[in-house]
Length: 478
Image 1 (tube, one colour):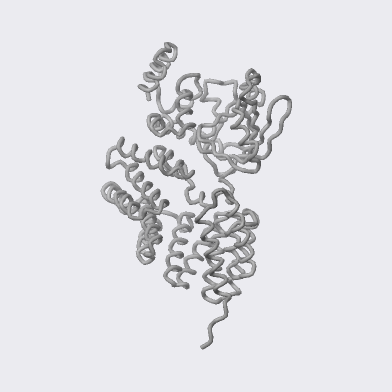
Image 2 (image 1 turned 90 degrees about the vertical axis):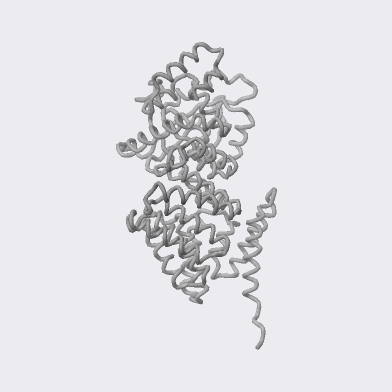
């Protein structure tokens, strides 16, 4: 980081002095102070994050990790000691016209910020950031007004006034990867006013798969965050490159090397390259077998990822074996009602369902549901998935009364969170074939109008629609 900063500012004596100061005096507990200082740090770090330049991100990884960790500590303290639940903050920005037009055309959609995001509780402070630049013809002045619910479980953010060099800015800093919903966009008094709300996750209708990659920042090594964030937004090549850089830079027996191999394995699983996925997951397993307790939660995660690979290649018996190994570890370490266990129970249920062991599958789905009901709001999409899975099992068992009951529970949730054409709504109608046909036809029409059509979703919709029609055919005589 130091060497690149010197190269970038080799003709700037003032900045070279700041680099010397950084090299002599920087420590991890003053990361915020250095980030808010008018110097090379925030410029180079934000440029690397904004352009997603993996090599540069890797060079700055220790500073970014320190900044994230310090912000996370402040976030937890702020949540514990703050009495008000809603905070409004502002950000003034000069934006290129084409970038602003994308925001303007995305009302009610979500944006994920890939840099650290600085705001102020004062609108006048925010306006000062663009007040003198409004005459430029290729940019527009934008004031973001952001409504923040302190009680949401989100990426870390916190007021940083006491740790910043800019005491008069009343700054609130959000970590990278924070997600906002665009509520409105209006022109007034010579600038554009964009209202955002802090969000926990993107709209399920925009990307239903995103929840599978959700990062729990509190349980993730800061060195792994970038790769997981890139994986989450489906930048698989960049995520893999970052992990390989991390593996080369750390001692081979470092815990993060094991998790990097594990995460590369999940990337290859998502690519459908299961042989390579197994290769990397086994490398992760060997590292943890040598460096960690056999009852380590990281081992449980690797077992679950190996189970996922085996599920994809129709080896459900092997998948159950790995899932039960993971469950055994988790039950030794986690409380009986920990939400992580719900995911494991669900995976075991899916495997038994594939093996046509419906009663056993139902037993594990019920365990999943019991935990989810303790932790999740009543309209959470994961509950809809569980209700729907249970309905499907009841259909296969010819218990249509319960199938209808759980289908309706799933349907009520999905009606609140999904557009009317979404195929998951059709999945909620498995015990109601007429309605399922209607919804799959809607989904197919929507997918065919997309440019390009999403081939996997389209194929799934045709497949399940065909299965319904097949069920409706009269059985042959004799």
